[in-house]
Amino acid sequence: MKTHSARTTLVVGGARSGKSAFAQTLCEESPFNLIYVATSPVFPNDKEMTARIQKHKDDRGPRWQAIEEEIAIERIVKEHDKPDTAILIDCATLWLNNLIYHAFPIQDHVRNLLKAMAASHAHIVIVSNEVGQGIVPTSTEVRQFRDLQGRLNQQLAEACERVVEVRCGLPLLLKPNDQPKIIL
Image (tube, rainbow, N blue to C red):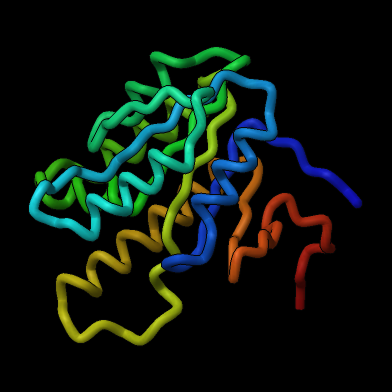
């Protein structure tokens, strides 16, 4: 079986596809120091989301250092820029949601993250949701979010050395792609 090592990896998939578990295992199988960047805001009144966050915490072992950061994930990448470190960012979708909610300039933040990732010596795994394979949303705001998420995923995929899609818990390697280039 061919293996693909990479310093930067994007893991994409739908809701409950197994992408976070795959990304976590990928990091845990490495010899590196492990940093988990949680982008989800904590809402004490949202019991379901609180339970999800707690499950993620329970699933991580003592090797992990957790950092909660809703906006400035490029700062975390810069602060932990060491070749013996793996940084798992979970997830880009909630990060994008946070940027929209706070009306921050999305492209500035994306550009800063991509620059930080390119300059970093750390191994970076970023999880993101694939939201564009369903029906066209009826709401303007939801369509705009879907479009922004799709563009963000494209930018992350272009910047990362490896892209893995997870479906039904199964990882599918999208990049690098050893297939010949498709032409007419």
